[in-house]
Image (cartoon, rainbow, N blue to C red; front, side):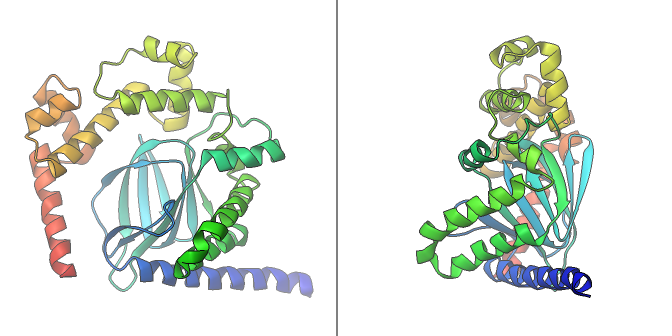
Amino acid sequence: MNSQLKPEMASSRLEQDREELTALVERYAQADGVWPTAWPALSFFRADSPGDRTCAMYEPCLGLLLQGNKHILLGEERFEQENGHYLISSIDVPVSAQVIRASRQQPCLCLTLRLDPVRIGEWLSELKPARPATARGLALSPVNGEILDPLLRLVRLLDTPEDLPLLAPLIERELIYRLLTGEQGARLAQIALNGGQGQQIARAIQWLKLHYNKPLRISDLANLVNMSASSLHHHFREITAMSPLQYQKVLRLHEARRLLLTEGCDVATAAHRVGYESPSQFSREYSRQHGAPPLRDVNRLRAVGASVMALES
């Protein structure tokens, strides 16, 4: 009898904790957009309606979807994140994300916690897990009580900010332990393990992020991270679902969109600043990435932003 009750009690507790965490996130995120918190690694996201695809760079992080539904594109691979599922990103990956289900009554609500490789490394020195095989840098899992409970306690601390400096690091350490001993533990370990292929690809990614507007020679990048060109290409695609050249192109187009939106660049200037010699090639690739030519895309985004501001006022 007790063995039958325990799973039911655990399921009920999980649902109660999810409802409380959802209410807390909604209280802190009162309008569309990303909301930082008093704990720098923690942020919230809210969307009151379905939206168009938006580009983002996912850092190593945990992202829990509490309400709504999202589609995430990594290269050509699509992930469907439903409420109650958490995402682990073990490496910097450029994605396209789209809110599919959301409303004013039930907004799409997400919690994101950046993961610190140093804290992960501290646990790895004690757990000594087997070195993980190279795998996608992005994965989804249903949340369980061992992960939800420390997340809820961390968010509760926002109501007593004087407790954050002492208690939040302890909760983060506990949460990382739960993640490392869970089904995404091997993927998470890629963030901190030295000398593995995951770390070599991470170094390649850091170089690309710093030099996205420069010409790319795969042989030079491979030498930089001590890999053969064929090995770099294979493992880079295995982790990011794209080649180094495709990754560089996505970085360029993400940055070009930012320049057009926030710095008022014209199309030719933005194209040149991110490394394109041909504005026409830039426009073609921008349209494929963002779904519309540069000016039309930027005008649409500005119109959406103006509408949101009008609603909030």
